[in-house]
Length: 265
Image (spheres, rainbow, N blue to C red):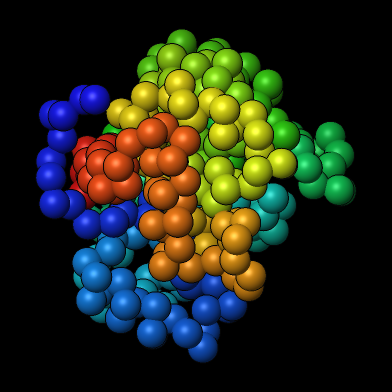
């Protein structure tokens, strides 16, 4: 077991959407719980407008840090003429620690050539922005790993960032890790049937390349009902610990160390 990591670190949820409407009633209680327990999070925008809304909704929560970006399925809805200029301003805010989430999503039912071209154009833009401001990039790769890897490899450089909601096998994990990425492990690791390849891969993925995420309110762990919250991060860590045959405290502290180093927390 690799021991060169900082001890006594708090839980770090590297992918949350706490600004979502679903949290309007309980947001205050969840943020208070996170404050009381010391949990830190990285808040990820979905819509273009989320880049501004999330700062408002999480105002005063000292443990939050933010990303700047637009979810790939929402890029066609960007209408602001100065969108890129505004995103570039947000990218250099002191509490902005990542670019994203960005990438491609080929699961979308209304997929057509024009939409794919839009996603790829914005994906390339955010990759270049992350490089320009020297921040890690958070990638959304749903059913699009092959094309995403093609685009990344054409850049002919190493990256720093996270493959959000990684659900692939060890071969796919290795391809991303060879490019410099960490793997975001969330509620999917608890899905015994749907994500068997991921559960098998976890045993071979080095702890040095894992960060934890809930993607709340999405991807609720298998044993629970309702929408996901940061309170479920220990359940995800527990499954990683079980699959790797290590102590949950080690998973907590090692993944927190990884996140702290990657995002400059």
